[in-house]
Image (cartoon, rainbow, N blue to C red):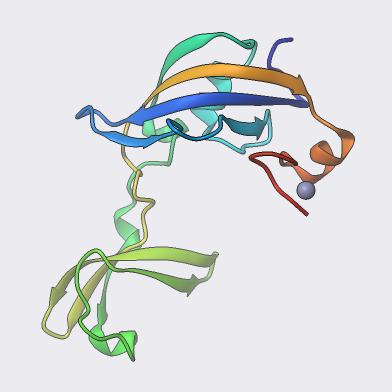
Amino acid sequence: MQIAERCVAYFHYTLTNDAGEVLDSSEGREPLPYLHGVGNIVVGLEKALSGKKAGDKLNVDVSPEEGYGVRNDALVQVVPKAAFKGVDDLEPGMQFHAESNAGPVSVVVTKVDGENVTIDGNHPLAGETLHFVVEITEVREASVEEVLHGHVHGAGGHHH
Ligand code: ZN
């Protein structure tokens, strides 16, 4: 069967950036399942998989707009070191969860300059063109429960 709304598809993937570095891969793991049409995976990849079937292999390039978004400079802020109470040895690369008007966000420290700490709330892959190599291993109908929940149940999916 072809991938369409109310289908669960399983696929192996390797994700690289423009520089050819591997960012993520299902190698050595079970194929990744997702429920088609509800945004479980980035929209550009979901579009490309529509209509494909088990056994299909494809290369998909996804623009930032259809991937993890473009970088937003407004999400880069300088905050006082005092905002990180109880954190010793604050250094670039450390991740924190912060509350924002739009709900919880993940930020990463990009610079520590005396009392000034620069944080970046962009997704780590924002602004990146994503290059996927995909092999679809299985396509099945989603259960009613999966459609209602908006995600896959069972192996590789949610258990609850
Ligand atoms: Zn569920």
